[in-house]
Length: 176
Image 1 (tube, rainbow, N blue to C red):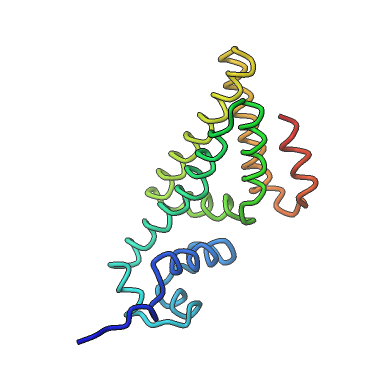
Image 2 (cartoon, helix red, strand yellow):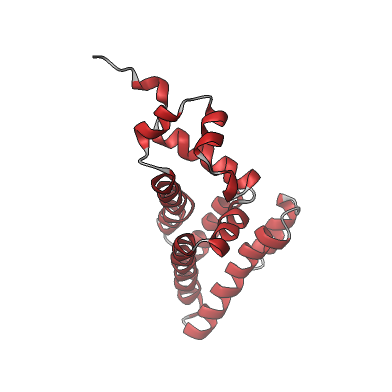
């Protein structure tokens, strides 16, 4: 028997729909039913890609970590100077969808598995910043403090100042 799985979309389509639901409606909206409704697809097409909601959530979080951290660090890290790495990092983070951090962190408050991934992402991001600031100053303590402060600005803007426009956010990001 021949099956046409192209109508089921790719796993990435499901994950992107999940991220959109997460950003706009919160983690409680990440149900198989709401995903199917959003994509106008059946549960069968969901189960073609994912064993269950738990496996979907894990793949969504892996996607978020890869594309919103690992890829950004890789691209920024390809620059030859710490100044250029920080500049590219700022530009790439400004291009991230709004509510990303808030949605993931809100979910992490209620889910220990998500919290573990979020903390791992935080560590990767801070380590990247710390390395760049260390290259600039050769002072480990100062690099550590600047990295944490710069990261706190990034997270803080997402968490408590989400209504800031891009111009205002750029001003804050470029303080460092």
